[in-house]
Image (cartoon, rainbow, N blue to C red; front, side, top):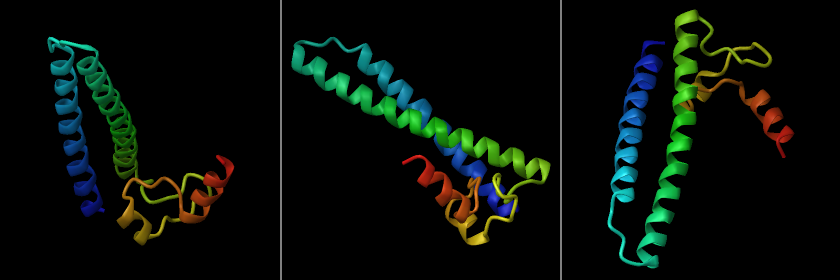
Length: 112
């Protein structure tokens, strides 16, 4: 459990650092004195990509926070759907997994 907690905290710190850096980059790009439409288009595309990356990382950060809360309350590693244990192999691959592999497949099929 301590190993998972350490990995989650390390990843959380990395994401927070990434988000801060990306936010700074976007701010710097917006402050640029752009000379023509091509420059503007290039910055707009980069800003959009950075914003998408930030959104994905915020989502992962939320999942990590949820997992850390589960470690604190003793429910870490228990599937939110069927309440069976999530396999250690799955947690080793995705340490913030909320569902066992069977329930995850059911959820994914429901979204298609």
